[in-house]
Image: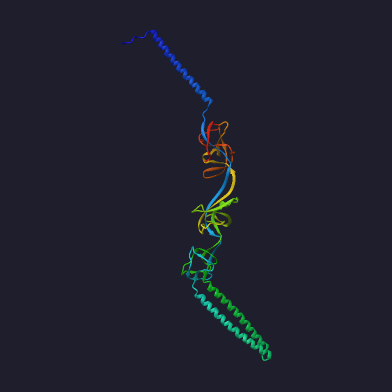
Length: 375
């Protein structure tokens, strides 16, 4: 059915209602905006950060290095004569006993010298016997007046000269015997051969090192340490060595010797540690590590991500737990470790340090925070 047209009075009423509804909506929107503004003024925006409580903890200054096990006493063995090596009975790694023959030189020359010295002794012994007999006869003749005192004195001088010549010949014989013995190189103690520099058929010179013998007994841990690491005056609080192949095998150690000489090619100094009751696994030449505790103090450390800068000085953001606002506080760094920064001063125990979310903070910024465990 067709709709009837609205009267002028109805049109006016409809228009008034529409305007009233629009005004009501505008007022409602203004009221909501005013409420939001008041709410913002009452509760400002707070950035959320993660914090960590600063705590004093034992700070151990450590040092470490790698080295090897060596014998406390080592000797370089050499022939006292020159000659050609005709035999070698040991090699590197062999355990030997004191007096054991290790190598021999060709003894032909020494045997010839020995035979010559023996012949000289025999000749001088015969001369001494002859002069002794002559002296005895002249003494008897002098007593009967058949021979002068001058002849007796001459016989006496011949006898004394023969005695001296015999003593000299016997000394040469002893030298020849010793020279022959020195063609045999013997171990001077029980131990292990750690180096060898001779082969059969090689001609060696006198006093040239042929073997290096590590004596049985006490063991040292030997390290080459940078000279700068020894410039401090700190005395080690503890020393411990461990096998690199099996770190569970450990032993206490004490500082025994610091070499006064510097290896100029490496800039290192040789340091020896005496191992206390070394386990059997710490054999000669074994690679070991040394762990040294140099100092122990109570210090505060912070995570790396907490570090910021204030006018070029290291700083951290701290949170006031009462006002819940931030402040950038300068610090002094003692040293940088692998995961944390150890502080010399600047923070006190109990302060809240921002460890997460500090990149966009500003001074006196309101924040909310959650306490995180130390990483």
